[in-house]
Amino acid sequence: MPTSSRRRALACAATAALALGLAAPTAAHADSAPAVNLATNPGFEIPTLPLAAWGSIPGWNCAPGEGALSTTAHSGSSALAVTPASADSTGECYQSVSVRPSTTYTLSAWVRGSYVFLGATGTGHDVPPAWTAGTGDGWQQLTTTFTTGAQNTSVRLALHGWYGQGAFGADDVQLSGPAVDPARATWNVPTADKVVFFTTDDGWQPTQAAEQFIAEHRLPLTAFPLPMPSGNTPDYFRRVTSVPGSSIQDHTVSHRDLTTLSAAEQQAEICSARDAEQQIYGVTPTMLRPPYFTFDADTLQAAANCGLRVVVTATADFSWGQSDIYRGGALQPGDIVLTHFTDTLTTDLQRAYAAAQAAGLQPAGLADYLK
Image (cartoon, rainbow, N blue to C red; front, side, top):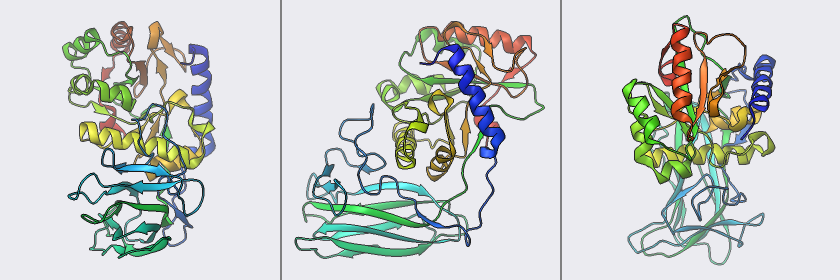
């Protein structure tokens, strides 16, 4: 993890990025925005992410044991290979992508096998899937077009076979159309309310003492756990975010510096973490805490493509015994305090809570303010 001085430097860099305009992208009209491929990991070229569940395919959700990467590819070095676990399974693999309302998109993929289907749901209209009865020994492209409804902001893309038809393959998925506007970035909440926001990252060291402090002080906590520790002790994270105003948000899968990754890898990291939170807790994150506070324009677009609206850093770090307020002085209204799930979290929260009280501030729920 970064030292206090490095985190301060990173916070300053993030602030500079905000000043350069990354926080306030200019909205592009759907009819003038260029068509891009919005699908996550469309060519199945991204290997399993560090810290991800074994065998998982970045960006895609398949039933356990049914989806895998294959070297029999239409292009590139790998493709999706699905073997349904039983005759009662179609072997569906799916992902969710953010889209613009009232906008036309084209969905395509190359497939091989018998009775393979490609479709989109949640579009706002009934859209029949594209399908083939069989591709022989080669690949065949399936294509379908849809226009989203006036209120529809995300769609579910799915590839699947049919009952009792065996394995199939897919590659080079493309959802072609205009992207949604990038997420905005902030290190605080501009507000005149006398409130402060407590956030806690990672999740490797859940402690009962911290849980007790949160419960006793009715502390709204915004948790940014990584999927692996979150999945190991989900009940703990449910309990520490049970105070009204609390929420569980996105911190990527692997805690890598996103600015060292391609745009496609960033989207896979963010969307896969979102999917894990949905599967574990039944909630959909709306915020991303970028590891090490580092992000770029690709991060903001990738977060938006995954349905996240805000990229959040912080104005103060109270982790590991620190009391580091980046701008200096006391905590101010709208400040976002960073802590971590470590063995010092209890005393870190005590110190941050005392600093908030000294400044006349009350802890509040971040998701209630950043919408």
